[in-house]
Every structure is written in structure tokens, then in C-alpha cells.
Image (tube, rainbow, N blue to C red; front, side, top):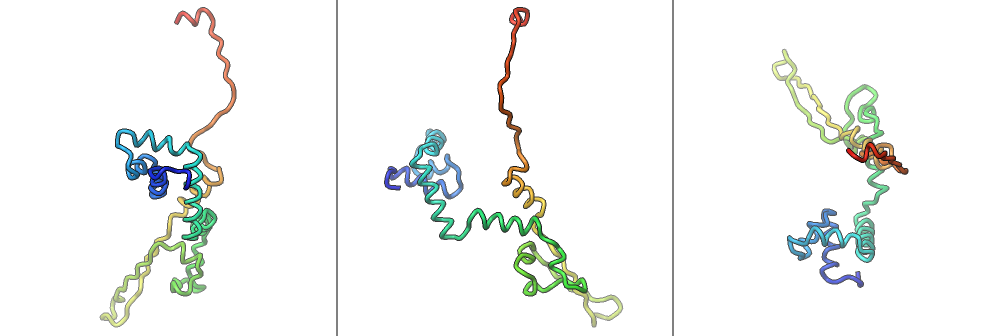
Length: 170
């Protein structure tokens, strides 16, 4: 970040917080009046783009959170098979007995202990309520990443308009 002014360097640091250029500009010390404009302009400057990329790369190495790792985690959620959390007799496996991929798909497990009717509380039944992470959401994010889904339709090409004298009077 040697080519940057102190304010620009601070902008880069602040931009990494939430990837919001206006908020980063404000936190870096730019005025409320100019923050949106300067934030947008800063993101167009090659030296600031490079500094952001370098900082993101350093953060990725430091935290070991990479695009590949995020995609792998989304794939666990999106392609996971619920049968992996149950034993062969149909009972829920203990979390320590589940493989990492199966355990990663579980958002929460709640175990409710209920007395079995007619046993005066001598016998209890364990009922497990399992919540899984959103499979459809994970698949949607993966699909968007791979370009399978688009939020907007883009068209390229030329359009020719012919306006006749009669139409020109309208």
C-alpha cells in the first residue's frame, strides 16, 4: 500500500470490514457529503483495487478461508445425504460418531426426554429434533457461482429503429 495516501490506505482497511465503499469512506475520515462519491471513485483506482486484492489475499491465507473452502462447505450442505446421520437401525448417531460432512449439515439437535405413559416415570423416551442447514439455499448459491442462475437477463446486439415521417409527427 506504498502508493496510497494515509486516507486511501485507511479506506482499504475499512472496505474489507463490510465491502461497503460509502461506509468505508466515512470510517476512513471522508465527509458525509462526499463519502458515496469518493468511495465509488476509490474502487475504480487501480492502486486501490490492487491494495484491496492483496489485503483480501493476506486475510485468506491468515484465516485459511478461501473461495474453494467456502464452495466445499456449500457443497456439503447442498449435496449431503440425511441418511449419513442415522445408524443402520434408524436411530440418530451420536455427533461424535458422525463423519465431518454429516455433522456439518446439522444446524442443531434438541433432545427431549419424555416419560413413557403407564410406567410411572420408570421409563423414558428420548425424542431428537434435528434441524439441518438450508440445502436449497446452498444449492442456489452454488448455482449462481457456476452461472447456472442469473438474476437479470443480459442481451447483446444491435437494434435498428426506422422512423418514418408519419411516426416522427407523433
